[in-house]
Length: 444
Image (cartoon, rainbow, N blue to C red):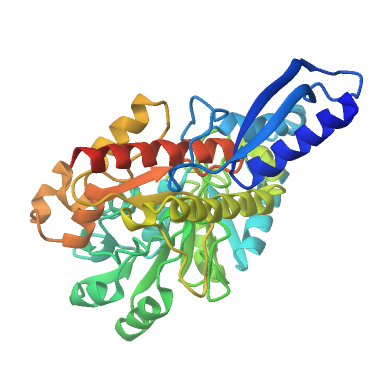
């Protein structure tokens, strides 16, 4: 066979095998060389190709996998948009409209549309969005607000800051979100609101939570910080309660170049009140009808986010593709029998801000240490539940108060899931986890 034909054949065979995860061995049958005449420097001549099935069907070991895998790499996504973003920032600088500029209005309109809401109000952060919502509902001393303990600190700190009492309810072990039955058990005459968190990118079970709220005249404030674009029974995150709170922190699915947040709602009077509260209680300059705070989304952040917003659909699809591939890789390696895999429930649209596995039997921290040793990024969201945090000790919760939450804090481990994650990087993540699990089995 002509050497060029041999090279093409070998390249096609290698590509075929890699796609089907078969091992490939190049066997020299003459002086191996790379032929650049064909325009492909990867064509190998003077070599034969042997296809091998692994002696261990569980093994996914490959020699071409990356040495390190980051938990998150915001620069990969930002690099592709760098020029467009710099132009958008330059326009803001040239306009001099650093606050309340047209970029903010444009972003508010776009986010309202995404969340199927009539109004959107920008603010300085997702944490401030939660605080402003509670302030607008005049939550204060003597009131109780039901929140999950398995969430980021801001969900409960906003309640505490207003002098109200955070009442922690346990979560569902599959979705990591509030368990409606536990919410109902936590109700008292002092309950004013519920803050369901759509954790990791999947919506909480909203129908029963909304029913509880209706029967008890409670406000529902959706913490959608991690779930822009997620859906529950066709309804976007943030559209189902009295309002939804969004974060534009850089690591979110739609992340800015700093802090930023937004409140979305279908209630015109609520939107107007939130807007005043975010501007020191002003509507007309220097006339204060309320005591508010200083919490504005600046025009530069809005300009950045408007550029990135055009990519949100593609980024979400890439996250979903990565999650699906993780499912397949873990199943092929039979690791789904030793770990608890995350699931997208029926009638939900998961946007996979995090891909969080559960590592039972007290093995999570050891697995994470091994991943770190081999330069594979991971994170624990969250190692200490909020009801056991030192600052909330006076609320009277003790270890064992919320058993599911406490177990999740001992088992949850988030793996890389960002949109630009490559297949080779995913393979490396699963390979390292498999190696650790096989080592544990051999030592047992």
